[in-house]
Length: 116
Image 1 (tube, one colour):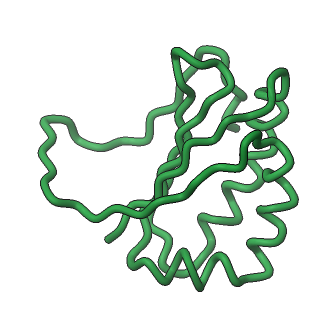
Image 2 (cartoon, one colour; image 1 turned 135 degrees about the horizontal axis):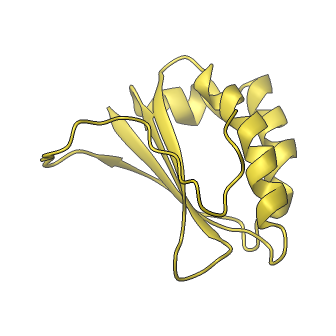
């Protein structure tokens, strides 16, 4: 399993529109072969900064399967115009993991788009 990490700086004043577009784009990536899970987190210190974390079964599921797919073109048209500057994407593998908490999807109720 690998982790895709991208820091997304959204143009000022467009955060709400970005979050709405992301809800649509989220379904696209979740349907891709090799996809495991993803989350979008909003930075507390920088209001227009987000952290995108996507777990893939293997690197090629992202770099080839998703990035070279027609679905990626739709993802791109929904989201890429929000970014300034364009994000750098990096991939990580687990070296060590420890948790005392069972994982459940967590959705912030403050200042976010309703997740219906």
